[in-house]
Image (cartoon, rainbow over all chains, first blue to last red; front, side, top):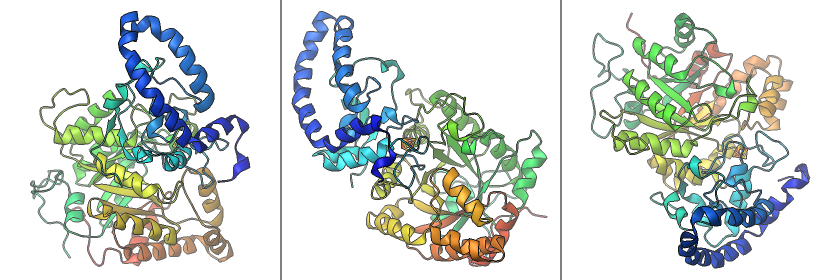
Length: 164
Length: 331
Ligand code: SF4
């Protein structure tokens, strides 16, 4: 892929994908903590906790991934490349329009998020997750924190497909 | 060789009698399952409310193709809807592949349309993500993309096999449809593409049609991976082909139509020849001949945009049908 075609705003996305393995490890440590906290969030009240939590989640994820706060984070399945940055918000892999240099069909200056996702997944321990099928977005979750419901992801993917 | 002859006499639009192991009651699935090399073609829908415009466009393919694809706002341009094109042509006995793109409809509209289409006799549905609105004549439109091609396949398969909508609500009579999807073996990430096909098959794709193939060596690599994974045994792979009108048209296609990959050598060959239009057809015929011999390829999909009247000649010269004559209206 031609390195210099892409505008600098996408440098951070590329960094995250290059460090997908590290980020996966951090997520792996962080996830049990979130799960332990879920009953606590419930006692305090989900709506009350969500606001401050969202501020922290956004501050980190917007910087690293250009997170769009879809409320159903799937970065573990998408090579640490946020699929919501795809102009078609595809959650199951690239469209057929990716340019020869790996740029998005709709924005020649942006690397296709799925080209990055594939690169990231190759660096991850559970990179095969990219072959799972994801359910379509629940639009009611948009704008909500995905850290609040740490287990919400379980219902997101279908593993009946073959993993090759 | 005779066309599939189990049609109900008298009514060209009648569904074929059900067959075990088949999901639809249309000709395309039967031909593929019995091992025939099939030819499908793209029909561009008119910018018109006159049914005659649809009939005229379809007539040039009659007797040469096994099914016609009715596109759904392809290139994000507005045309007659694919449901309507299918309904009109189905009455005459044509076999249709109804394209459904995720760009313009949400999950409620799509599922409703699919039930309606099946009720009007549509037997094949091709699930597409769709081009971005930016590519077409209404760049200011709202892009929907509520589903993607894979969740769309999942949805339609559940409607058919489990008689339920996405919501879980039951469907009284499920649609009997043969499900298709699109592939592009020529777009990055190349090493992921066969896995993407596997994902589509897991979601329900029974046949796939590819983007234009102008690079046969690249296709061979892709198909080798596909056959290694055994995917050609679970899904019929049809390869997209089409004639270029000139080197300029090829260059335009390459830079303006998303996902079309044309090697420079091929454009050079077009540039150097005396009669580019003829050369374009020659190249297309050569590609079809080569594609037919690749293991795992079950057919070709002809996209002769603005050269539709050439399709019959190209199909005939390529001998891909090996003497078989597709369906034609009885005189
Ligand atoms: S090229 Fe990539 S980022 Fe662009 S619309 Fe297609 S999948 Fe999304």
